[in-house]
Image (cartoon, rainbow, N blue to C red):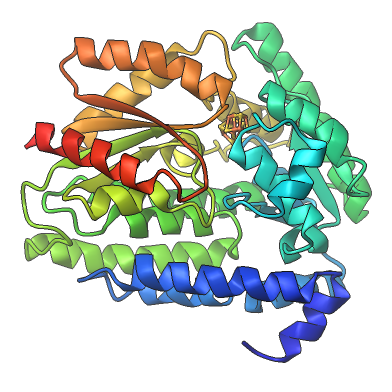
Length: 425
Ligand code: BJ8
């Protein structure tokens, strides 16, 4: 690792010893999971590079942006509109929360039976190991599940720059008007942070920039419909994870380059796994970096993941924002329309998600669904019950798993996943 980065991390207030330990574990984990895969697309080298520099070069780029007067905004949820952030001359980064850290410290602040994602948010802060978190000028929390809502009340004492966005819990006219009001409030907060007024030109450019990166991901998803699948679920998940913190234009270019390669693979009938390998759709809680546990288990047990019905996946990226508006007001409405369609399990009732899962099963020719629930995540685990019932009623094999970020249940998980895959053959 470049020695210059050490002073950068020190200036950000990181605990260098703990941070070295984290990078050491991550590097080994990445090697064993990603680099050990056979027949990867050559274009994945870009993502390997991004991951090897995830706390290095990308942080340096963000700090260079800050030195040039730009602001950095961090978010934990796909309801935070990147379009508004970019239009206000700021950069949005996803704060990943995909690994356990400083668990003992965290459990002094949060109940033990809190989901791993929320605990990880606190662990990265308390352990002083996340340079993204420390580089942010504004951290946006959102009132989604009860766990997050209450956790932000505590997080505000740990960070100086927390902004909390309220969100509706019901898809209705009133719910949508709350979303609209909150997005306008957020727009003003971004403008205040950056000192830049959002104009129709800047908002249109921002909408187009985000649409370009979502379109690149749509292209990649479309190619995963082929049998044999030209890319592993692990690599596809990684691109969806990098979506949250890479430079948007560079990200879109890199995904499009992989897609060019995948199109050729499909024409040559070349896949990462043989034809007729059981195809799995994963549905449920988001899998943030470096949470690669489930796809690793699935793809080393004889199946391939062909889609993710998840916020780090199609739930987060599937809709574009209409860019045809002429005024800021019209484009803000288009943004509200776009985000109002996100079918997170915090909404009640939430029939759209079940419809989307079924659509994805058909579109990706999935042989079965694995519902991925993080332990103690009430919204998704509660929703897994009607989802499983409805899918089984349509003869779609479904396996519900509940897990966390630890490796303790790997053996048990593998046994269940293998038995499920056997059933799909
Ligand atoms: S839009 S899925 S990113 S809230 S796993 S913290 S739900 S208890 S993450 Fe999410 Fe936004 Fe919804 Fe998507 Fe709570 Fe469950 Fe934990 Fe969760």
